[in-house]
Image (cartoon, rainbow, N blue to C red):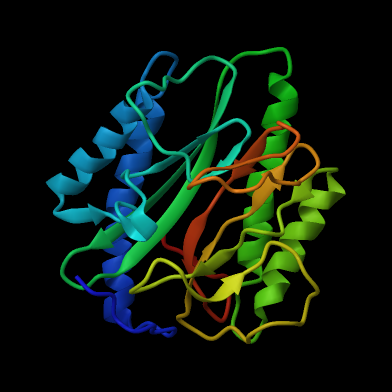
Length: 255
């Protein structure tokens, strides 16, 4: 199916389709959280995503987009984004894992995108890492709260950056959130930093994927090789993401 042209403002029918996607999205994430433990393979999770989407006759949206070969991105520890599931890779204690997944309905071609991070460990620094994940998730909601009518795109990133840096962590400036609809990545892009009051004005029923990407360490990344991107200093990072609808009051969180 060819992608349709970008439609920034969605009508109620389009938003309702995205809400239906979100129900499947939620089921996928709920089942991942039940499944993932030490010695489970990354491929098991990839197959789970495929099986659930087949059941509902929707697409695992990442598959073959930009030639990505898997159904879900699984990025572990210092891998920033776009980790590729493999039968050879297993989850282990001490792992901090990011799951980034995208659902696309076959009939209309509308997308939803979301991500979460979880710990698979009980190590000596668990409380410190739990705090790091808590701050990262809080930053997502700080950004979402700014996604209201007549605010600007960089108001979102400014709120995210302030919260993260106030706790001594780092925001990645090379990777961003994005608008979403008939294509996975649409403009305007949503930076996780920046000066408030700049960027495109937000309008009612724009659909955005907001996704803070937060570093425990320096915030610098290595050169990109293939799909996967790694943190330069080997430290941990976190990602949380929701697809939302811009509203006059608090935005609607679809997934």
